[in-house]
Figure 1 (cartoon, rainbow, N blue to C red):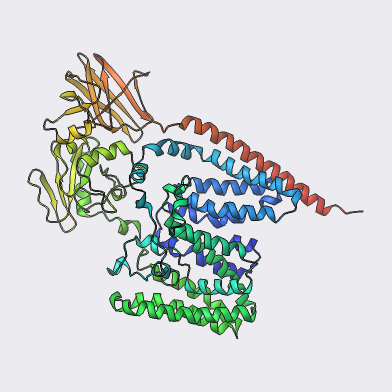
Figure 2 (figure 1 turned 60 degrees about the horizontal axis):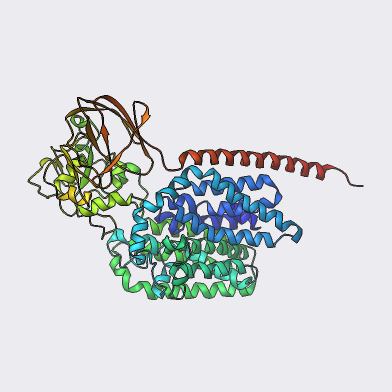
Length: 622
């Protein structure tokens, strides 16, 4: 952001102001630790590097690398939302150059997008190949309203002036039907908002692009009735939670606020300062009226301080700076206190060990006697929410990620997995055939939960942990393979341990020795010794991209229990290698290599252009 504001011609003090406003806006802090911010924090840098594209291919290469990092950030929806700002901004830069240069500049901007896609191909192509099989696509097709953003109401616009307007979940006074992360994300500081208003009044035409984008992003973020039908027919946007577009409103507020701060420290013009003073008075009145009834609920002086004193202190400094511009330099400090202090109520600054503590219940699931093979866990209720188990080193059978494999999600649904809450959960112990087949050794439950059919190994204030003695190994020879029209449902209601189900196969496997020689996240080696033909079942999810070889030669697989890998085994000793490579991964590596060659060529040509430009400046003219 500092570099972008430098490109826009602002002084160092104004750049610092704008950088604080965006770097610590509530979107960044509320989504700290999520992949969203891997992308959104780079958007100002992308916009800044777009300015250098006109100078030559070196600037084009730098912009390409920034866009590549955004594409690799892990959150495609945020890249899509960033593009809604970056593409129009590139268009404005094209119109700002002479007509003779527009085609060349447009070609360079196009090259940025194409080459960045090539460089990010090893991530993007497997993702696109997996997308049709995801839980998100299934849920959106079934119910588009799950992506509906908050309505465009006065109450939902209040976070522009107060991030804690709806209360705060940490002090148990949150009141809204929507996620706190989603609601607070347009706040970039009260002083930034006030100064942005002053900048708009002082130079409406100068900031017309940002004003137009602010209006458009507001409409897309809230999707009023006349906008929603349009959005639902735009590819990709129709699958994205567009309420998160409000981070672009924080970005625009920070940019315009930096321009307003520039007017402030330079003395400004009277019209801008008058508008700023009016905005200060209006904000004080709005915050006072809106927050007075709820402050009694906060129960903490610190929250009251950071939601009133710091913002109003910024407002007071702005008013005082009307006469004494030097006072304006206190505003960035107060802005920092406003942004960080207010959101500390939501995201405290703590280390990873405190964020994901190794409680006695967690330690109970890492006992040495259970190192014999890979085991899984599951939970009842919210004792250990899905995905958070990854941070404490256990493999949970439950899923939360919207990119989860839909056929596996259908197996969980058949077992009673409840998705009505933000984190899906089993409200009671899942069916025994399911947890046995999936190799679930540990069940974690809220304190006081009693499960008579399992062995209690830990009981404490953190959770109860139970051991499942009948869990199956990751690879095994089943008792039977029965044909079923709905294998997932048959697994859940089945009463015979070790029986698996297939839509096409019926078999009576022979006993055999199955040994796991190697087990890794993307591959396993399994040695099978059988006197006659048999069958090996596994609880490995049959994601597209799995490949099986026997003694080095390709070997066919079967889908069992609705979403898992199994295969026939001939008599004798067989060495099987089950590997996973994302779909189109090999092709994506080739495309990435091609992108690296093009990017390297951009840098080489750009360096020659820069050298030639320096020589031209040093050569005396006749």
